Length: 128
Image (cartoon, rainbow, N blue to C red; front, side, top):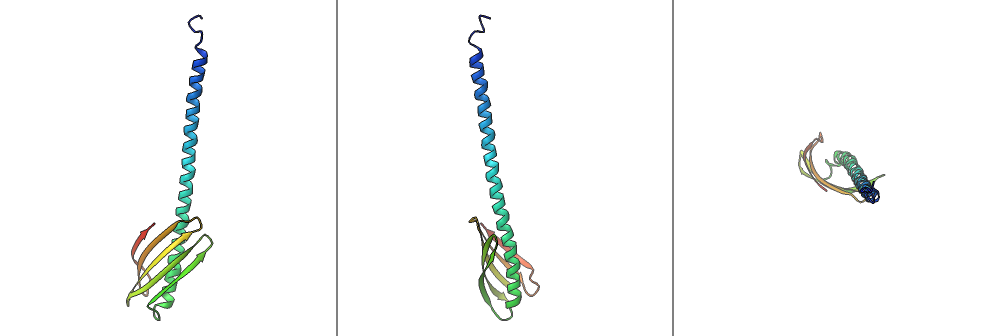
């Protein structure tokens, strides 16, 4: 018993510190997971905005191409807006550029070429 004198408190402090460091590490990992989930949600919203904008731009092209060579405008959606412009390259191709802005401030820009009159995507370039 004499050799164990003064050993319990240092061991308790050491195990408590190890436990606290593990707890802090788990909290940091949880914070990173929350940040990742938020970024993933914003990316999903920007992607859904882009899909809605492309569908609306195709409808705009279908209704204006025989009479207009170029057009630009803006679509407003519940979770953001899309600004676009398009121009007719030839009798059977139209090139469009669209930028979507989510309400959280995420910007997503793409350029695409569609065939006319069937409006199939021929080329797609994007940037964030």
